[in-house]
Amino acid sequence: MHISVLFNYTESVIPPRCRKPRTVTRDDGKVDVSIPVLTGDQAPVAIRVTGNFIGRDQAFSYELRWWEGQLWSPISLDHVFEPRGRTTGQDNWDWPELPEVVDLRNGGRNLCHTYDFQGTYGSNPIEDVEADIHAFAERHTVIDGIPHRAVAEPRYVTMTFGLSGNHGGTAVLLANCFNINLKAESYFGLLELEAALSYATQVAEKRGDTKSLPMRYAGPTFDVLLPEVVTIRNPLALRALSKICEFGTAPEQALAGYKIASTIVDTEEGALVLYEGQDVRLVRGAAVFGAPGKQEFAVMVRQPIRRLLCSCCGGVTRGRQWSNRDEGYGLCVFCIDFCSRNETPERFQSLYGVRGVHFDVPVA
Image: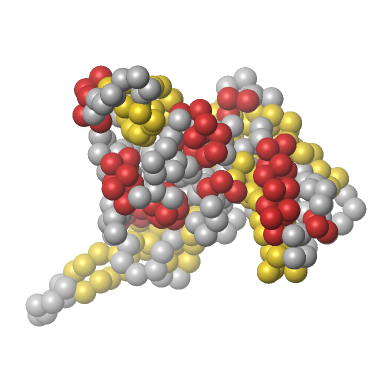
C-alpha cells in the first residue's frame, strides 16, 4: 500500500542583494511511503487483553499482534492499555484507514493528530522531515484489512505514594514505558506478575503500608499466547541468570534483541575476540572459583531483529533522533538516561559506546 505525504520544510536561502542566509519555510514537500499490508498468518495474535474500564462499568477486550519484532494494536490505547477514544468523551478508538494522500501541513509546522504525526518547530531541513515521515510510516500497518499501529510492550511496575506508614501506599500498576526516576528493579514483564506482587509486598512491609496488604493487581488481564514476544524481565532475575556483580546490572529492556551467552576468559578483550565481527555487549560476571585470574562474562549477541521504535520503552525514535547509528534500531534519549543512572559511568561507556553500538550521549 502506497500513500503520498505532503509536508512543510525549511531551507536556508540568501535573498537578492543580501549577504546573510535566512530560514524560509516551504510548503511543497512531498514524499511517497509504503505501508505493509499483511494477513493474520503473517502477524499472529501474541497477547489477548481483557478487563474493565476504570471509570465505568464496562468490559473491553482486544488482541495485540506480533510482526517484525513489534507489537501492533488495532485500537488507540492509553498508558494503562485501556481503549482510549481519539475524541474526548467518545468511543472512537478504532484507528482510521490511511488515505491515499496525507496532508501534514499545519501552519508553519507538520502536525496531524488523526494519524499520530507530531512535527517539531524551528529548522526542519527536507532530509530530516523525510526521515521523520519514513519512521512515521513504519509505525503503521494493515492486518486483515484493519489498520494497526505499533505499541509498546506492557509491563508491571511497583509504585509507592506518600511518606510511608499508610500515608499514601504501595501498589502494582501497569505502564507502557520506563520512568527514569524509578529503579530498574521496580519493573516486571508480563510473565512476572507473581514476582511483581511479591516484590511489592516486601516494599509495603518495609514502608509500613499495612493498608496496601495483601497486595493485589486490579488492571487488565494479559493472556500471553506467544511467550517469546515478552522481552522485558526484572533485572533481579537477569542478575541471577547471568551472575552479574560488581556494578549492578544493565536493565533487561536495554538488552532487547540480544541473546545472552557466556564465556570464561582473562580479559574483556579476550571475550571480544571470540565474537569478532558481531555486535555484542559484555557484562562482567563473577570470578571463576578455582581459576585465579579467570573472569566469567555474559556476552549479549545482537540478533537480526529490526526495530523502528525504542527497544526500551517502545517510544517513537524518529529519524534524526535515533541515538543508535545502526539503522532502525536503538534506545531513545530518555532510556539512555535511564540506563546511565543504573550503571557506573565506565561500565555504561563500555556497554553502549563500543563494538557497533554508538550513542551520542556524553558520559559524566
